[in-house]
Length: 287
Image 1 (spheres, rainbow, N blue to C red):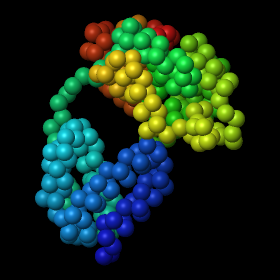
Image 2: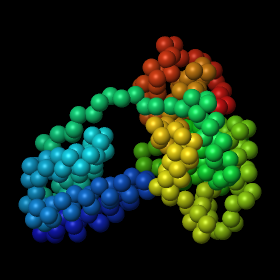
Image 3: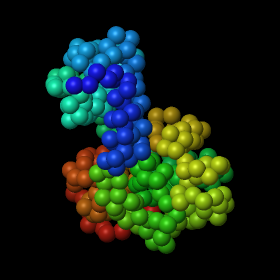
């Protein structure tokens, strides 16, 4: 078996994720989370994989919680750790999975938040002079795209009546209807968009695809400017789902549009929308 340090194994693990077609956002998160683990283990003088014990990983979890990471964030980081150790077993680096017994922190089942009509109109108002971010916000509100899907959207996949989200990671390809409000702001941005050799819709000033973290940070600034401090970027997608459920849109259609793998995931939003019986409408609502 190898005597390679954990630090040296991390880049190889990341390459294996890339070869499996995992999304850039997932790979970035795994790298960041596991770099935290490597730094933690080095401080405990645990350099080689076989030196790591379950109590080391328990301590890693508890340290993150003590550093005010949310239980949800810590659980995500532990998922990365467990995937990393399972990979080491598959590569014959170690013979046993020391992460298997490490428990996730308890996560309270808190319902997601969504913006009211007054609130998302206020957000539109403060962002109206930033054509690029206005287009991104409108696209999420009108189509329910994930931020990573917005970042990955290509010019060639924007049609007159729909946009295509290419298959990635475990997500199959899907087509999403695009309504007039979203089309108008998207076209307004594309009209002033720099014209470098980039396949992506949303790009930076130097012509590179706009990174997820930059999209998230930009929208967060406008959320603060609109005096909506209790909301996050993810609440825009939730708003799309809730407003469509309230409008009586068919839950199966909505599940397909949002890219939920299971209908039960979409059904969780019924309580949030205060809907007991989903509708059958086959057209998405305009927000």
